[in-house]
Length: 594
Image (tube, rainbow, N blue to C red):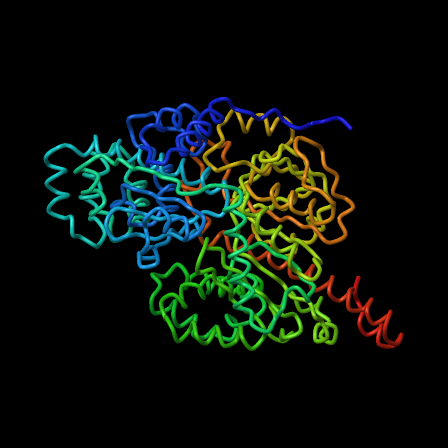
């Protein structure tokens, strides 16, 4: 077999990575400033204007979305895998630090209320993600600091520093001009920084950012210890459910789409949701709802209700949240949170407790109610892990569960040949971590998604590549991918497939090989929806948001995954009846299976 793995190494990217890993071996905090030169030299596709005097607003917005809003106050970032690492380093009260979060990254992060941030990491990929984000943030902060030194701007910011509402048009014009940026970009940054926007600009004007970074632990043993703690917490919260005795369908997705599709809560709350947007929305959602009603589009209506539900629960607070939790409990959906180590939420869903009449209409025609009622299988859904954390977590799961029936992964990706909102279905994955190229039978085809996608395209038979980090790419790097037919860029598929290999082969995954996974005895399915198009300069996740448009591919892929699971379970239960029951019983179980 000819080896068609692209020679993707970029010396500038490798130098950058070698630099920060060598520095992080120090027992004393390092200065992020020492990484600025190598960061700019790699010419990251997410930070294409790093070396310019003018701010790169897309890069700053991207970084800000992945850092907590207290970052303006932070000058020391501590990273470690488990609490013990922080305690042994002298931070004995780490649990008392304020828990903070970022909208674009799910990590356990604590702020001491002054200037220190503690970040819990799950794998080396968190380092490859966090370090470039911090470096980009500091580079752009310091550019803006230089531009905000005029006395009139400093006076305006000092007078307005406690302000919590939005800038007027005249004020936005003044500050945008001083920052040498477009007013629209300034307004986007204003949304990201929220109520602290003016306060943060004032802090930027007053002084340069000098972030220090220290890694408290980083051994492979510590990563695996952290994963073991995560599993122990999950198992303890499940109470009487022993996953070691249950067949498991593993899913990596978000924490809302599958629950929404299974509970029917949004549909039962439709009148309250509509009343909510009529009272509090500026008009866009009301108009969208009316248009959907006029078109009599059930699929779009359900997706719309799911979108509104998240806002509704956030605003309505405990009452709505408790009502949803009660419905989840009634049908065997268990939410499991990690409290001691890294922050990856999990859900366990007992198939035999689901109510077929509550399911989204797109699922109902593949559900066999009698088969479901007798099922002992569960869905274990984990909240998108980052990079190599996928390998560590799936390894832990395959070691512990009774049997693995399927591995299904929904995730965001960059596309080199499509548009934002398209869905890519790969059958080849090159993994930059192991340098393996994995060939596998993706259980999904375009036909599994097309009926449920309203806007974008579905591209199957694609070739994907799993990269070390979002910043660790540049145009030359991606051009090599594209020349070899690789069009789907993300971070987790390769690590997941390395774990799949170890789940059915008696050895560790190899390195730098073409690996055939066609003999895997369980389902393997990957569905990636495009969140950015990096071949278009500046068109990255910082340049915009999927917003409501992201609902369409999210639910199209989630529906496809659940339909596959229900179909597989119908067949499995039918086979059990054939082997242990009567032929009449079997006919009931397998009716319309195909």
